[in-house]
Image (cartoon, rainbow, N blue to C red; front, side, top):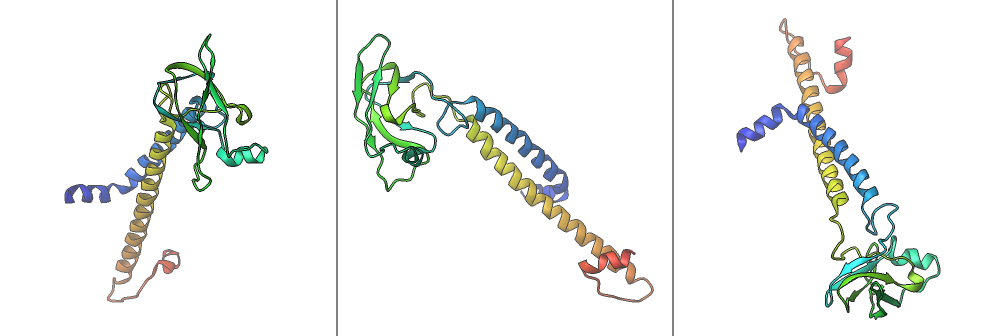
Length: 199
């Protein structure tokens, strides 16, 4: 472990560049995935026409911006009137449990227990088109994964880059002080004096 730490210290400049390039790559993947996925938290996403549910399972109803977005449009969020319909079937009302105002979710409005299984169309009246982010056929959140990795790589790259820059500055100061000792003279040189000495 100690040997690995020493290796990282010796190559921190190269590692910093590699991590920063990785952050750029993952940032690009995030942008692509964010535009392709269809969750309430994806930029510009529209809800799918149908979702797959299982009877007896609990699901969450969401809209971009959540409760605050609907309230800005004058829509009541203290209760929800939703229903599900299967192809050629009758409309089945849902018992929506609206989230408490004390809860501060990003996009979620409430949850329900599905009364039927299969692919259904969800209608929530005045709430407009809604997402069921945890439906059975919901895609995995790759955008979130790429975003987390981009943040980790960026943080590591910046930290190693600053460490490498500090180490190089310290070596330059030591070299300048060593040269000034030639001939028996000794001068204290700080970081702010490096430019004057080199001139």
